[in-house]
Image (cartoon, rainbow, N blue to C red; front, side):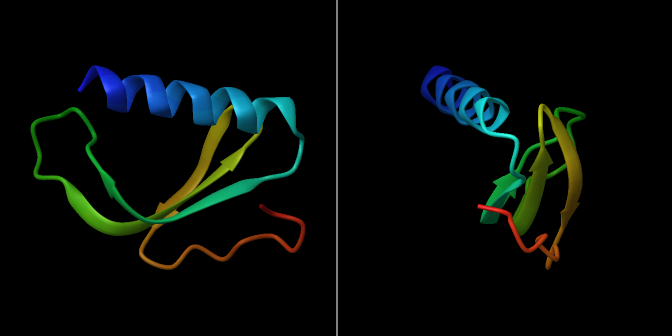
Length: 64
């Protein structure tokens, strides 16, 4: 779990350093509410914010 938190922290830090949006595809999302993990989702980050989460997030043209 600590490795996962460290990895996510590094990824978000990297995303903030570059102003282009970043898309993670096919990940498992754990929302922390006790609900089951949701698999094969895409996550769009814009700056230091999660912009969209879903099964097929449309990425902006300049996204990484």
